[in-house]
Amino acid sequence: MKERFPDTTAYHLLKIFFMIQRIQSVWLFLAALGAFAGFGLPFFSGNIIGPDKAKAFQHLVATNNIGILLLSGLVGALALVALFLFKNRILQLRLSLAGLILSVINIILYYLQTQKFVPGEGSYNITALVTLLVPVFFILAARGINKDQKLVKSLDRLR
Image (cartoon, rainbow, N blue to C red):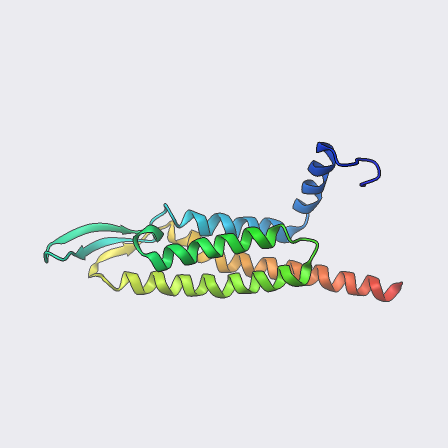
């Protein structure tokens, strides 16, 4: 492919097109999208007791807590970095597994933050599904990367 299209825009577009054809690229992109969506989409909504002992209605988003904010950003960044490491499958797999672990920790932090709301006066939003799907996307990406790795190993045996 490089011989036909030396360092031109067409070459780079073809390179990106072939990268997107791998299904794990789609899963990693969706994981990044879901992680970054947590910055604006509410996970939980309800009444919370403020410092003046008054109830106030509030949405729980990643920007409400510095730990959740940093972890969501890190999960999204890991997914994007892994997305562009399609030539190094071992590192891509490791980053996907790290992203999986961090996204589960992120969900645990979200749950712990929901405990600060007044019991019975709040509910999980439908947009919480976006955050809950991030680990699923990482699992699907890891499966795709693992299948690619097995295919390459089987082809190496045939040589």
